[in-house]
Length: 94
Image 1: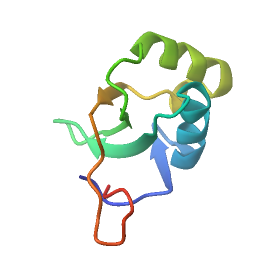
Image 2: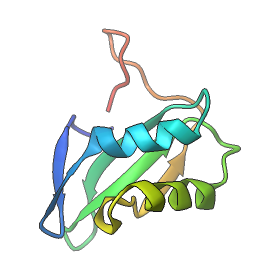
Image 3: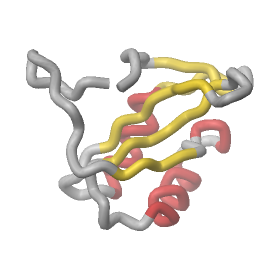
């Protein structure tokens, strides 16, 4: 999917991707989230959150994250997938 990053900058602000995942996972019970940075069509960094629960309400995740993270740490995309790809080490393949 994407290269592994632990920190990123969005609009000049440094964010910890693990912090976004931490707060999302607190809401998700048994589901897992993975935060990634990608580029949009204008080459701007975009924060996305992948979640392996197709039944979760996206708005509830956004509201939960808004209570715990600064505005620049809120993902602009939430993408639901059934399961994450796994690499040969048994870890999530970003």
